Amino acid sequence: MPLHLFNSLARKVEPFEPHDPRRVTVYACGPTVYSHVHIGNWSLSIVSDFVVRWLRESGYPVVYAQNITDVEDKIIRDAQAAGMDRATFTRGWTDKYLAGMDTLGCTPQVNHFPRATDYVHGMVAMIQTLLDKGHAYLADDGSIYFRIASFPTYGELANLDRNTLQAGASGRVQADEYDKESVGDFALWKGYVETDGDVFWKPTFTVGGAARVVKGRPGWHIECSAMSSALLGPSIDIHLGGEDLLFPHHQNEIAQSEAALGQRPFVRYWMHHKHLLVNGAKMSKSKGNFFTLQDLFERYGSKIAPAFRLLILSGHYRKSLDFTFAGLEAAAKTLLNLREARERFARTAAGAAPSAFADAALATFVAALDEDLNGAEALAALHGLVGEANRHARDERLAAADAAAVVTLIDKADRVFGLRLASGARELSADQQALVDARAAARLARDWAEADRLRDVLAEVGILVKDGKDGQEITFV
Ligand SMILES: [Zn+2]
Image 1: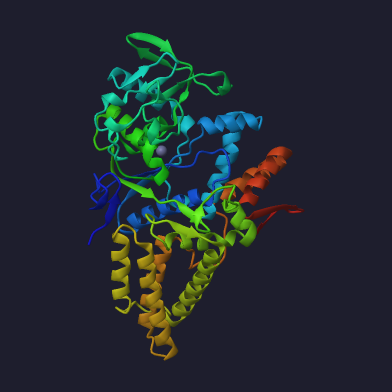
Image 2: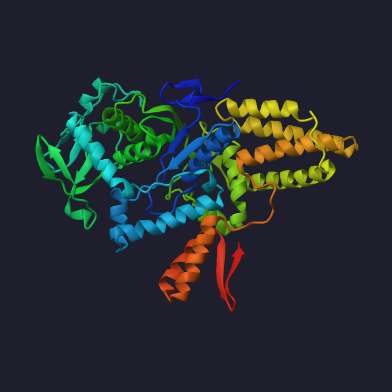
C-alpha cells in the first residue's frame, strides 16, 4: 500500500498524491526566535524531520523548507527588554536554534532555512497583489488588513462557520496570535507604532491608484505565505505545524496564498502535530514542567539527543505523547540495546548477503510508516525481529545471511528515525564546525565578546570549548 497521510483539511486519511512526484515540496512552520525553544516545539522539528526522512526513504525527491520567524510581536517586545536591536537579538536565538537542530540530527534534511526578514520584498509584493485584487485594504489605523469577506472558503481548515463567528468591535484583529472568538480581518502589514522602536520598513504601496508609503512591518501570517511561495512555488504538497497553528495562522496562510497566487489548493496535505504533554500535563512555567533542550542536556549530556528522538517518534504524531524523564531514560536504554544488537549481528553477518529472514518484519515496518507514519508499530516490528534473532543466536541457529538481514532493517530504521545506531562516536556537524571556526577567528581578531558568545552557543548544545595552548579544545558533554 502506498503512503497515506491524515489531511487536516479533509479531516481523514488520504492516499498521498504529490502534485509533481519529481519534486515533492514540504514546508514546516519554524520557531519564532526570541527565547529557548521548549521540548514541545522540538518535538515538532523532530516529527517534521521524520516525515521528510520517510518520504526520502520511500524514494520521493523532496524539497523541504523550515522558516525562522525573526520579526514578530514577541520579538520586538523581548529585544527591547533586553536592550538589543532586533537583528542582533534574533541572530543569537537563531544560532542557538540551528545548533539544537544539528544536535538532534534534523539539519541534514532541511534544504532551506529562510529568515522572514530576508523576504520582506516578497511580502510587500504579495500584499500589493491582494490590494489590487480587492482582498486587502489600508485601514485608518495605518495597517493593511486581509478582507476575509472577500474569501468565501475562509474557515474551511479550522472548520469554522463564518456566520456564527463574532467579529471584534472593529471587525479586525491586529495581534499575530488570537483565538476563534476574535476572528476578523487580520493584519498583513502592521502600521508603525511607537513601541516598534527601530523595527520598521518603508515600502510604497499603490492604494486606490495612489502611491502610499506605509511605514511598518509584516504580520506573522504573510511571512510564511511569502517564504513558501518563493522557495517551493504557489502550491505545496505537505505543510506541517503544531496543532495550535491551525487557527488562525494556517487558515490565514491559505487565504493569503490562494487569494494572491490564484492556485487552489495552496497546500495538498496539512499535517498537524499534537501537543506534547510533560508529566501528564500541558507544559507551563507555573507548573514546573517546562523544559528546553538545554535542560535535558544539563541532566544527561547532549548524547541524550537520539533517545529524545526515539521517545518522540515512538508515539503517534497525532496523539498526545506524555514526556517524562523515566520515559526518556527507558528510550536511552532501548537505544543502547539496539546499538549493541546491531554490533553483534554485524559481527555474525560478516559481510554476508541478507537472506529473507527479515522480510516479514520489513513489510510490517514499511506498512506501518505508510499508514500515516505509525512509528510505534514500525518500531514494534523492528524490536520483534531483533528479539527473534536474539533467540536464534542463543541457540546458535542464526545464519550469517539472517544476521545480515537484521542489520539491514536496523539500518533502515536508523535512517528513518535518525538514531545514530551505526556510529558510536560523535563528530561535529558542518554547522557546529562553522561555529567553532568562527570562534577561532574571533579570538584571532581579539573580539572576546564574540568569542564568548560563540562559546555559549556551543555550550547550549553540549559542546564545551576550552582554550588550550594549541588553540581550542572540544569536548562533548
Ligand atoms: Zn507558518
